[in-house]
Length: 231
Length: 113
Image (cartoon, rainbow over the protein chains, first blue to last red):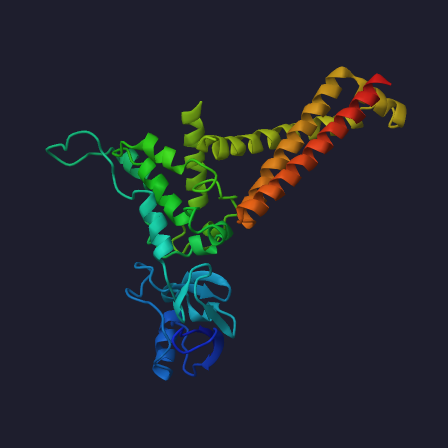
């Protein structure tokens, strides 16, 4: 199987280039990450992140044949040759397929991804009804791989100002949480032309999310809550 | 300028104007289908009807509002230097305003003639 892989080592290379590589023994059960690990045996300098190898940690997110995804859960047989692998677009490249995700994490930090509670701490845990808990389904599963935000043109153009779909999905996750008591403050933080409203609902985020989540829907819900609050 | 004026309100106006334009388009097409005769005098008479005149004028106001929000979004996305962005916004704003004044003149002339 033929591969065309983005290579760039800022300490050695003047500019990035695509390197052709080939793998002889390929089986139907192999995932893209398995192939990458074998390719790394051919060329030790090939760099990429990986950890859990089962679509949970989100560290091996990359651009696969023009589409963001996780290498560990992408079956090799689903890919057309040559398999073009590039780092996720819109973020600075550290080396080869590894990107600097500082900006992405900063935007995640900006939405205060934790419960804010003003009431005194209860003696027992903060309880939720099953219905209240159900509202978090489709939100808490985000693994912060960055596939969605780096597929979003609004995030490419304004990564420092627009929060991006991943952070906005989490913003709604805490707005939707019955235990959180900072709805007004959270909504105020999201106001303005950039943080939330750079989203033009093109739904690239939904298209690429490896966990099947829907950030566009979450963004729509934030807007409607904002609208409800402003009336 | 408050952050809401720059964030939520343009988004609301974009939706409201799109909804109005969709409804107006349906009304316009139905009106044209049920026009007694599809010729210039009947068309002019339809436009001179004060109710239709108001609907048309509001329709164009909504169209310009929709266009302004859309073009502002495009400029904010792609043009980052403040001076060039301000110039682009000003030129687009003036262009839309000129169109609005021209439209007002056309409609008034059609009604008053």
